[in-house]
Structure formats: C-alpha cells, structure tokens
Image (cartoon, rainbow, N blue to C red; front, top):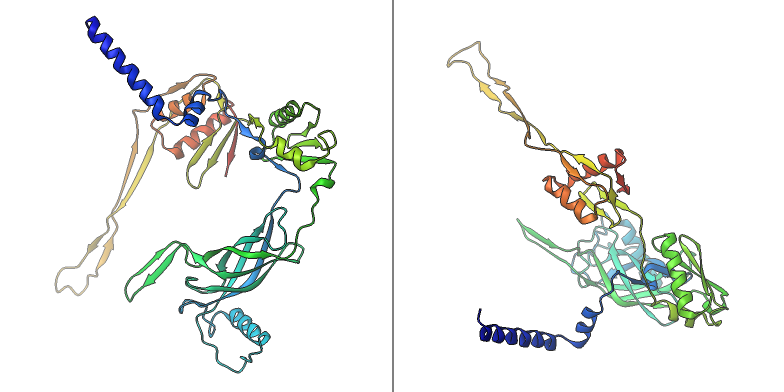
Amino acid sequence: MTAPIATRLCRLMCRTIRGMATALPAGLLAAALALPAQATSRIKDVADFEGVRENQLVGYGLVVGLNGTGDDLKTKSVFTRESLIGMLERLGVNARDDDLETQNVAAVMVTANLPPFARQGSEVDVTVSALGDATSLQGGTLLVTPMLGADGEVYVVAQGQITIGGFSAAGAAESILRGVPTSGRIARGGIVEREVPFDIQALSTLNLALRNPDFTTAQRIADAVNESTGRPVAYARDSGTVVLDVGAGGGDAAALLAEIEGLPVEPDQPARVVIDETTGVIVMGENVRINKVAVAQGNLTIRVTETPQVSQPNPFSNTGVTVVVPRTNVEVQEDTDRRLAVVNSGVTLEELVAGLNSLGVSPRDMISILQTIKTAGALQADIVVQ
C-alpha cells in the first residue's frame, strides 16, 4: 500500500470514529467509558427495610353487567345466588320468592397489596378473579367490596370497571380462547379506608434484611454505609441482617434511609447450581468450580414396536376362529462414538458450560452429569433441585 492511499484511509477512519462518537448520546457515551470493573447493585435492590413492607388484602364480591357469561345461579353456583339475594335485600328488594336465572352476575375473589405508608383516600390496584363457573368477566363491574387484612379489619374498599387481558369466542363447532378472561384488574379501583400504624421516626434502630443472606454481602453493606456517612452507623448482626443506628446517623430515620438506599455494593453469592427437573432448566452461579474430572456420556435407546396381525380361518370353515397374533420387535441402540472428555480443575463457568456442550448432551443429560460430578466430590457448589 502506498503512502498517499494509507494516509487517505487513515483520515477516513478517523472521521468515521469521530462521527460515531458524535452520534452517541452524551450520557450513553459517558456510561460506556465508565463501566465498572465489577457488577454492583444498590442497597435498596438487595435488602428490605424493616417495617417498610406491603400487606396483603382479600375480599369477596359480586360482578354485574356480564353478557350472559356469569355464574349459573339455578343449578351450580349456589353461593352466588345467596350472595345476590342478600345484596338485594340490603337494598330493600325482596328476591327470595323469585326464580333467579340471570347469568349476568359472577362471584369473585378480590385481592390487592396495601403499599407501605398508604394514607386514607389513597388508591390501589386490585385484581378480580372468578370464583364460580363464569366463563368471562369482560364488561363486568365490581360492586362495593370490603377488603380485609390478616387481622380481619377492613383496610380497602374496591369497586369499578374490570379490565381483562383475554377473550373467548365460541360457535357450534369451534371455540377460541386467548389469555385468561376469568381474571382481570381494576386500575386504582381500591380506596384506602384504614391506615397501618407504623411510625418509622420512633425507631432508634433500623434493620436491613438481605434478600439473599450472605455474610460477605452484609459486611459490604455495613462498610458502604459507614464510609458514606463518615460515622459508625451500621454493623452486620448476622448473614441476613444489617443494623442501622438512627441516633448515630443524625436521628432522622427517613433521611438516613434516603442517604444510604442508593449506595452501590457488590453482592456476593455462594457457589450454587439450581436444577428444575420439571422443565430441564439449569442455572449456575459464576463461582461454580470443579476439580479435574473425566466425563463420558452415552445414549441408550430401547425401541419396542408392536405390529399385531389378524389370523382368520379359511373361507367356509366351521371350526376356525379369528384371532389377533401379537408381533413384537425390540431394538436396542447404544451410541459407541462417545469418548471421555477431560474437564480441568478450577475452570470458570463459561469453560464448564463449553466443556459440557462439547459432549453434545441435552439439558436433562447435563442434570445427571452435574449430579454425578457432585457425588464424586469434584463439584465445589451446592446443587438445589426444585
């Protein structure tokens, strides 16, 4: 390549690189240049603050306005019929002597999560699920439904138009079902009537509960908090709890939590292999290591084929009978081209997966291989089978 051509090519490449850098957003370019060497997470993403939690609520109600897709009040859904009669009687309507055959009503269970520090008048989302034999809640309206907590008190009252994410249509010879039309949601359909008493400012200490307990992670959180505040505010009580001294942090619990919840920490995790035998899914952590082993895997296939034959007597025979004669063919096939594969000691997760994939094994065969390596004492990780 001559010098002028090389010079022009270099200039063209420089202009292309400058154009790419100019086209990138400034924030994205800065983030790409400042990628951390290790993956970090915020404290609020790896731990929960004591007392700052949701509360589960449940209620029983009626949905009206269905287009003939509700419960069968006459033969099956007796509880829906009694609930409808009781509601009408509370409204001053005597329906006990009438033959209720409407299919526009459905009994439902209503569930919701009450957020922490929810005040009276706040609105929450609720989920509505059919309880009887209703085929769809599309177009239905939930009537006023009190929602109870674990203590039996009413915390939320729900009502509103139901939105479902599926539909069903049926004809004489074919039907179509998409999603779950018997379950839906009401956005902001519940109004908080009772508050959960909890005063965070009255606490002298706060506990951080780690979602994945680990001594290393707990100590890293405590070190990050102490380094950020400049005072010995936190210490690790055990592998799942980090204690915060609100008094040493200035006495304002909310301000202390706001200051530390965004601090970056690098969570640690034990070497673990999680196996779901139902679906054949295998998940391995990055710290999984094995000692040097040799692995061989062979497939054994046994095929049994039944081809019964019918034996009939000769025409116009008075003594013979028609019988079925079984014919069974058994074939055994074993792969003979499988060889031992050596997996070296201390390999990384990527090398372990590549070595197992090189054997050409399926995920279910890989489950057996991992369990066998663990039995041999060469897998330095815990195996969790779900």
